[in-house]
Figure 1 (cartoon, rainbow, N blue to C red):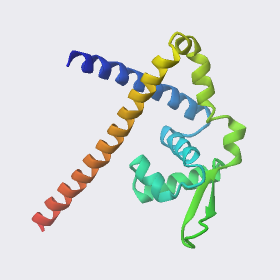
Figure 2 (tube, rainbow, N blue to C red; figure 1 turned 60 degrees about the horizontal axis):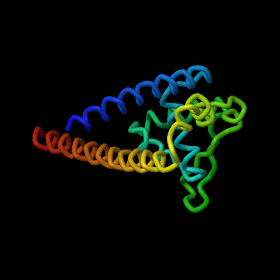
Figure 3 (cartoon, one colour; figure 1 turned 180 degrees about the vertical axis):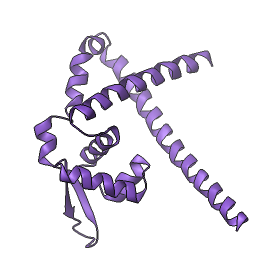
Length: 163
């Protein structure tokens, strides 16, 4: 158990430091942290992101998502295009301002900053780290979704009982 606590401490600290980096990056582009996370999601979705998928991924209400997307669209960070098979839907892609600002090039900056650390591990070591981090990510994401759904169900039951 001690090993798990030590790992959790390191992961929490790394997450905190990465959050500071993301906030700094967002501030330097004149947006907020959630906006930046939206841009990362849209990039990863590679043309398949919808307002609903952004909302679900970020844990935002549809209203908060709409406000954020309007702000990002006005600034040129995202573009909305009609969905090819759903005439009422839209797909999101990155706007020209993302490329101009270099905001999503954190990956290259991160690798440069940490090159000495990466090169101190063998390819086999890094493969193990990737496998571990990937499994942890999937499990955490799935657990969070399940907890959110359980919370919503519990709140719905509370409301129903009080009515």
